[in-house]
Image (cartoon, rainbow, N blue to C red):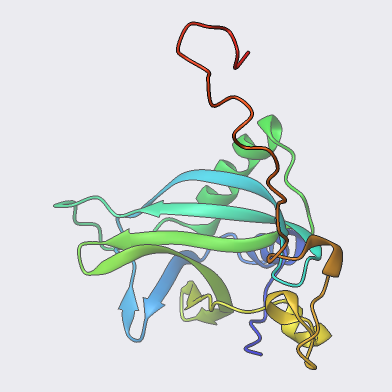
Length: 187
């Protein structure tokens, strides 16, 4: 299974706190930085609850930082980390963020479809803290348990009491053959 290394909110924020005077840059593709004119438009906390194809309930929390790149706005330097921290403080005063929440950065522009990406690395380069972003991959959570798509590696159904092929017995379908609209026989 493809494995993506994630960073939680506590560790992400800790790295920001260690570098308040640096410019905050985001790299969304090889040699492609989000425009220095970007804005942090919102920070979302999304509790996720799902049931995988093997029938197991999974839950986690994502902290999603949304970046917006305004068109026709030129700026030479990106915001300082301390400005991002000020935005985070405003958010956390209204919405306490789960320190174990998985961090994602949401971004898109005219050349790059909007998507949520993981911080792959946070690297100090010169006067900047560059957050290298990596796209998520689709994964089957149940396959590690030998239990994908409702069956195990032997092809046996995961939950035989909930068989997809269950049959409904139909009896005496002609009992109300004389029923006519408005006769109240179907009530």
